[in-house]
Image 1 (cartoon, rainbow, N blue to C red):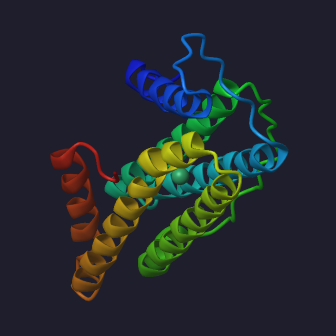
Image 2 (cartoon, rainbow, N blue to C red):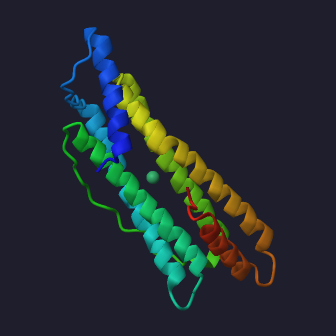
Image 3 (cartoon, rainbow, N blue to C red):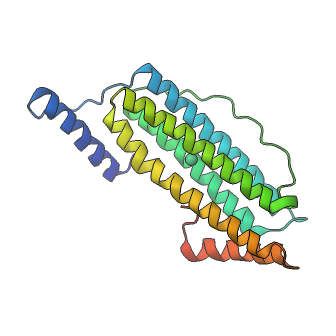
Length: 207
Ligand SMILES: [Fe+2]
C-alpha cells in the first residue's frame, strides 16, 4: 500500500487538477481511471520488474553456493532482487489506486549461468538490464505524457526515474572497482569484501 506521505501527495496532485478544471476545489476526490494504453504499459512494466527480480535472485543464489561463496555479491544481488520486487508492487499499487486491474504475466526462466566465472561480464549484463528497465520506464512516462496524466508522470519521476539513475551510477562504480581489483591475485576475494563492506556501511546500496 502507499505510505501516508504518498497518499497525501497524490491527493494534492488530484486536488490541483480538479481545482484548475472546475474552478473550485472539490472535497470528494475520486481517482480517475487510467486509459487502456497506460494500463497496458504499467502492467508490462510490472512484468519487466518481476523478470529482473527473478534474474537477480538467481544470480544471488549462484554467488551464495558453497563452491562459489562470494557472499558480498550474493547480498548485493539479493538487494537488487528485493528492490525490483518492490518496484513491481509500487506499480501494482498505483494501478489499484487508480481503479484499474493488475494483470500478472508469466515470468521468464532466468538464464542458467556461472555468474562468478566472469564477474566483469556479470556486472556488464547487470548494467544492461538496468538500462533496459530505465528504457521501458521512460516509455511508460512518454505514454503518460501523451495522455497528459500528470499524476502518473509525477509518480514515475519521484518513485523510479531518479532511483534508476542512482542504481546505474552504483553499478558503474562497482564496475570500476572490479576493473581496479581484477588483476590482483586475490582480486575476486577483495572485491567481494569491498562490496560487502559497502553495503553494510551505507545501509542502502544499491539505492
Ligand atoms: Fe526497477
